[in-house]
Amino acid sequence: MSPLALSSVIFLLVLGGIFVGAGFRRVLPGHHLSKESQDVVRLGAGLTATIAALVLGLLIAGAKSSFDTRNSQVKQLTANVILLDNLLAQYGPEATPVRKLLRGAINPIVDRMWHEKVTTAPFATTSEGEKLYQAIHGLSPQNETQRSLQARAVQVTSDLVQTRLLLFVEADNSIPTPFLAILVFWLVIIFLSFSLFADLNATALAFLCVFGLSASCAIYLILELNEPFNGLMRISDVPLRNALAPL
Image (spheres, rainbow, N blue to C red):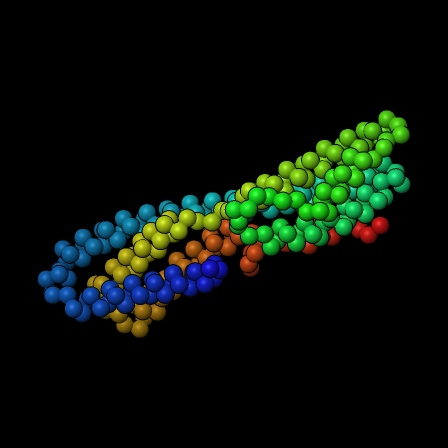
C-alpha cells in the first residue's frame, strides 16, 4: 500500500475514534461521565499522547536521517562516476571504449535503483556494469602513469560497487507493521477520549478533524522518507543521469 493510501486509512480510523467517542458519550450512564471519570481518562490520554508524540518524533528523526544518508550515497555515487570518467580520460585514447561503456551503464543502473522494490532475491549486477568492470581490468597500461591511473580507476569502481550494494541492502527500511498498528491504536484512543467528554459541535468536530489530519500527515511524512526513490519526496535521479557529457 502506498504511503498516501495508508495515511488516508489511518486518518479514517482516527475519525472513527472521534465518532465512537461521541457515541459513547450519548449511551453511557451519567455517573460514568463524572468529573472523577473525566480526570482519569484525561490523565491516561495525556500519558498515551506523550508516548505517541515521543515515538512520532523518533520515527521522523530516524526516517529523515535514513533519507539524508541515502541522498548522500547517491551524491557520492555521482561524484565517483565523474571521477572515474576523468581518470579514464587522463589514461588516453585507449580508454575511450571504456568511457563509452561507462556512459552506457549509467541509465540502466539508475533505472534499476529508482524502480528497485524490496525483495528477498539476492543482488544481481547489470550486464552493463559487468562489462565496464571487466573493461577497466582489461586495460593494458604502457607506462607508470597509465598503471597508476588504472589502479585508481579500479579503486573508484570498487567504491561505486560498494555504494551501490549499500543502497541495495538499505532498501528494506519500512516501519514494522505491528509497530505502526500500535501507534495507530494509540492515536485512535487519544481522539476517542477527546470526543468522549465534549459536545461534538461543528467547531469541535472541525478542529478534531484537523488534528487527526495532522497526525496522519506525520505518519505520511515518515512513510515517504522511508521510500527515497519513490513518491513525492524522492531523491532526484537527474544529477546522476546527467553526470557525464556525451563523448
